[in-house]
Length: 58
Image 1: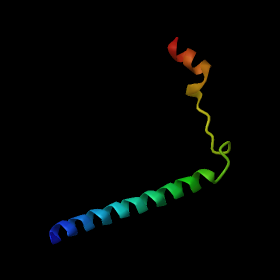
Image 2 (image 1 turned 90 degrees about the horizontal axis):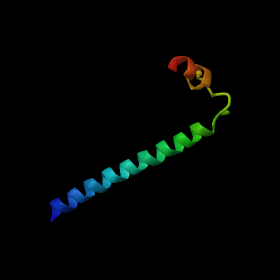
Image 3 (image 1 turned 90 degrees about the vertical axis):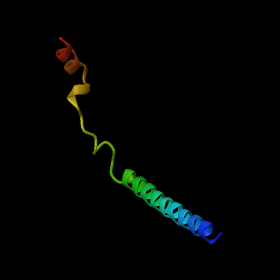
Image 4 (image 1 turned 180 degrees about the vertical axis):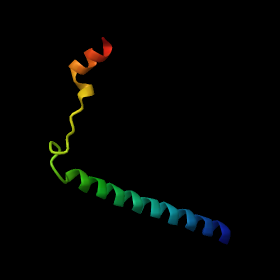
């Protein structure tokens, strides 16, 4: 019975650690997305323009 309780305690500790890492990463990603203007970080790609597509297909 003690072995079962030890195993359950280990599993609970691992699950708690995973939950803590998830919360920390989620908060970090939200903070990172709020920082800066999205238009300033936008990079234009010529491969998405219609002219580029028609030139490559032709």
